[in-house]
Amino acid sequence: MLYRRPWFCALSIGLSVALFTASAGQPSDVLNDFGDVEIEKPAAKPAKDEKATPASPTLKKGLNWVLENQHSDGGWSSGSHGTDGSQASSDVATTAFTVLALTRSANGSGAYHSTVKRGIDFVINAIDTAPEGAKLNTPQGTQIQYKMGELVDTHLASLMLGEVAGTFDKETNRRINIALDKVVGKVQQAQRADGSFDANGWAPVLSSSIAAQSLNRAIELGVVVDDAVLAKSDDYQAGQADVSSGSFDASEGAGVELYAVATSMRGSSQIGGRTGKAAPTASMQKKAEEVAQVAKNRVSADSSGALMAGFGSIGGEEMVSYMMISDSLAEEGGKEWTNWETKVGDYLASIQNGDGSWVGHHCITSRAFTTAGAIMTLTAGNYVSLRENRTDG
Image (tube, rainbow, N blue to C red; front, side, top):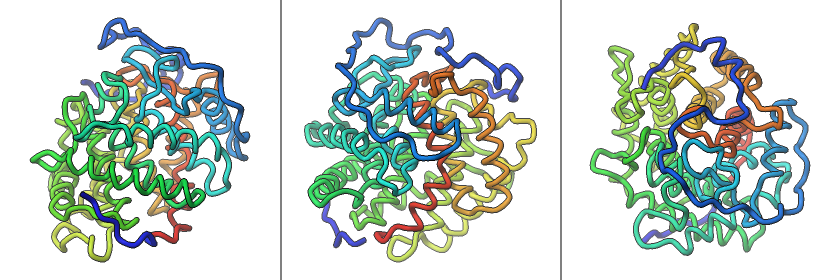
């Protein structure tokens, strides 16, 4: 049982011309991992929320697509691999990721409030009605689970609730706090012997990184996280890189270097940023700083674009990785961040669909999930601003 402290607190190739100019309107012609699936067409769309706040044309179009494609139950969907998932049943992972994207984009302005609240209600209901164990009450066999790990819904729900905690009215905040306690407990239950938090996916290192990020945020909010769980997580997150050689262990990331670099950078950056009772040991602090620097060096040295290419074409996994790199570099600022921000921003603009969405061409093909990932990447600066303005830690 959790107790809350006082609530104050495959092949990686270079980026080719084809990659930057490929038609993004539909997923690539890939095998469907689940065969024929029954899909549920959402009922009439909910009333439109606030229009997108002033931003780049790329971001505006993406936000408007998200606002127009929320399901009547408050969620968004991914469905099975090989589809864009728009008409499938809502799932927690896609919904939580999209709520995060809208929250960042609002940047404390209150924009998208009703859309975000409906998404939060959907996730809270999935937590409240969840069975015992680490899973939530959400569709099983989704492309997000198949590729990132079967518990990714739990981890993204935990991360999202931690980010929106304290930003609503008293009653909504109370419900968020209760749900956050529950889901953080499920994240801790999910931890494996090696310190990771997910498996049985194509690139579960991404899900494990999200879980670790959610625990770090929960600690800031005063949610009790077991010291042993945190220590094992730190060992795993900082253990994916060999500092002496500058190489990364991509075995839990489908052999794709981008996923290993991104998760190593994000995990180590967060370990090094913890203070107070949750601060890492001196030796772990040193190791985390070294790993984060090695990861930054690898990103800076990617003049050919081979790292950024990821699996070789865009997928939801690439978007999650871009987000993690962007968040880490934006927190530090400087030339490394501005160079990366320009590079990834130009790339995302070049592959955006005419309707404002993005879609994956391998593995995670979901239009909603991939679009949310692009928005998260493009608003990393807002993420830093929101953190700086917090009063809860």
